[in-house]
Length: 301
Image 1 (tube, rainbow, N blue to C red):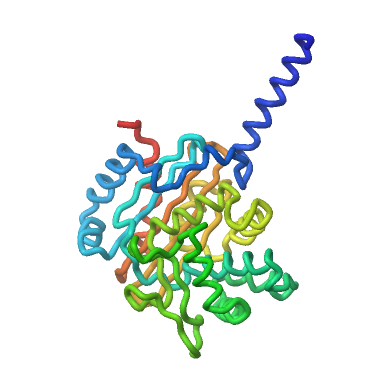
Image 2 (image 1 turned 45 degrees about the horizontal axis):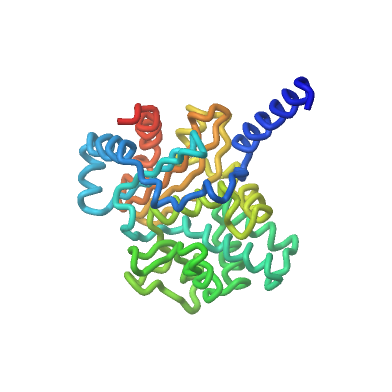
């Protein structure tokens, strides 16, 4: 091969790799996508724990198991770092688990069990972007509790695992009556753990929810949230150009948020999840973002 052709090919390959790591879903070799639990990083864990503990109100909630936080550093997709506090502590998560309905619906569509009509597409977007309860209930009725449970407990995903504290679960319609299918550990109707929600976003970012095509479709649905509170309120101010993929929830004192932040600068690319049982939870979630970004910028110990 002539030198100029070699360098052209090399340049193409370098650009391809860079673009593959800038786009979502990421185009990573399967051998490089490790289970998130195996990517626990002691340095990130220490920095996260210390930062949260430096805020007395947060520290008290963490001790009482009324606050859980999960963090995934995606600045280098080949060296992902994971940390969590109260990671496997399952809590009521209100509307956040609607992401479980979304995945179950996509799985059903892919398998031909649910028709991808204009109404279904509209309801999936309303369910996520506006957290519309009526749209969510219509999606639950289309898919069914059994299907949602089957997908959450599928060994391929294991987003709900009785042996690991539970996880993502939807077993009750939103804003309506009818039959229920509560999870077996705590009898919760809408549940989550920060570890399992982090895993959900991590697999989504890597195109591993259903397949690459459906993951892309799910990312499109979750991008540009129409509710600008909690994490999004702060990120609108400090990172207005970042891409945000998000689902939150609130009911009484239970406040939750989950987000995939994808900045133009690779140093602002991460997954952040918070579950809080406190009347001040919404404000705490807003206030979490800047300290978390400070944690991400700290050097590896």
